[in-house]
Amino acid sequence: MPVNPDQPIEQLLIDVNEFTPVLPDTVSHLLLTRAGLDTEHDPRIARIASLAAQKFISDILLDARQVSLNRANKEMRNTGSKSKDKPKNVLTMEDLTQATAKIGITIQKPPYYH
Image (cartoon, rainbow, N blue to C red; front, side, top):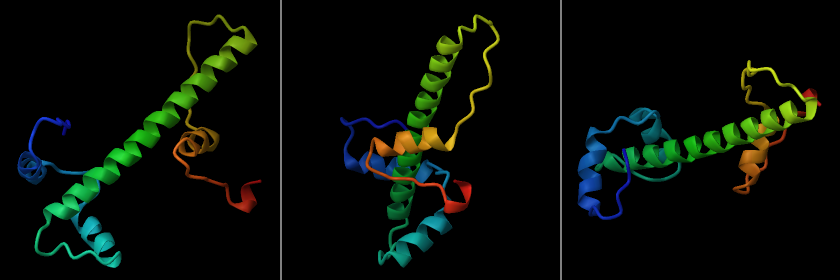
């Protein structure tokens, strides 16, 4: 669902009814209820929260993918590999850690992985 700043908020409320977020409505309702927000009277609130969570997660994953691609390109330049076959891009914990650090979130591996 693309965001258009020229459209009024009423259009967002209409569009959110037709949108199916990745996070199911029941999960959104449960999490928002546990946080103290009643969404029984207007389920669109949970949909908007799900949409915001989906956007947040997708932004982090896109940043992590970019970090991963940059790392892979740097490794290829350092090894001097001129192979036309690109290795598979693998998202690592370090890539995710760098991507979340940009927005102030610190991720650490559990102690048994060190």
